[in-house]
Length: 375
Ligand SMILES: NC(=O)c1ccc[n+]([C@@H]2O[C@H](COP(=O)([O-])OP(=O)(O)OC[C@H]3O[C@@H](n4cnc5c(N)ncnc54)[C@H](O)[C@@H]3O)[C@@H](O)[C@H]2O)c1
Ligand SMILES: [Zn+2]
Image (cartoon, rainbow, N blue to C red; front, side, top):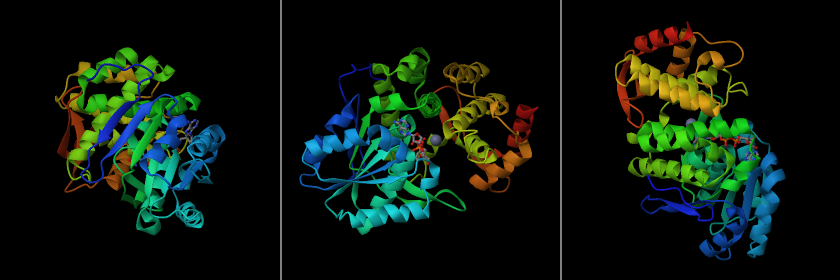
């Protein structure tokens, strides 16, 4: 783990994918220099900014001013905020508007927004003219530490989330950490669950550092840049080893098997944000690991304590509204994950920072565990 850096120093994390390597630049107030970076990277390129209505109201003017200052011609495509924009009709509109704005092979798409915009604009960039380059300017904590790293793009199908898409890596990611100051505390906390996840997957020192410094991550002190950089670095390393998720990349799903089932049970609604579901899912994954004698119950309790300290839920009964039963959750897990002969793959832990892929977990054990949790 590297020492925290001063506020004013942007941190660069490089994503080392052969032929498609790119930089993630992380720092406060980087939006002002976006135009300069783009002009240096792609002189003469036109730009189309894809963003959502909420982000447009807060940060689009600054992004456009920065591009104009660098002499870049930019158009804008503004879609409704929210998951509903990861749909065929909105995808079609974005593609048609990119073509209408005469964005060509040498030009750039800029995705200014959270994970929804990154996934939507990235997929449109992958499809229009068989592939346009794009730059991500993630504006939520979740998108700065997770969705902007790794090149997964896409939209939702009526059969499920993210079922239509492409791997398409950006050519640059500019993470302006000051943009997070306008996020609601609840959305910020939900994104933080993914930050904690990196510590729990493979970096016990980072988790201990978060236990001591999480308040500064939220308040926007220099700790925020450090936390984002460590997170990106870990995801970048895992993705570089396994871009298409045939092995190690599955570790990033810690907490997500339980989490996705809980999200589905809550109807993918405001009752439970993705990061909140992951928080409960990680607490459950550690409790399940402890029950199986894989990790100490002290570690499982430490996970719960930290997530609770920051204000995240860790128990199923903290989800407002109807509570799903164990049977329903097992059914939802089965829809999300391949179950072969009553067994499925889980991400479990031998301790904090020691997660591993457990390929052969008996569904009956999971059902019994969930039954206990819900009692
Ligand atoms: N591609 C990947 O690898 C990957 C990984 C994880 C998640 N995702 C996807 O990311 C999406 C979730 O991302 P998200 O949580 O960023 O959601 P989001 O993009 O919907 O943003 C959440 C809300 O915050 C608002 N917002 C964004 N930036 C803001 C800012 N700076 N200030 C105030 N409000 C702001 C948005 O308008 C939206 O209402 C999901 O669709 C998920 O599937 C993708
Ligand atoms: Zn996630």
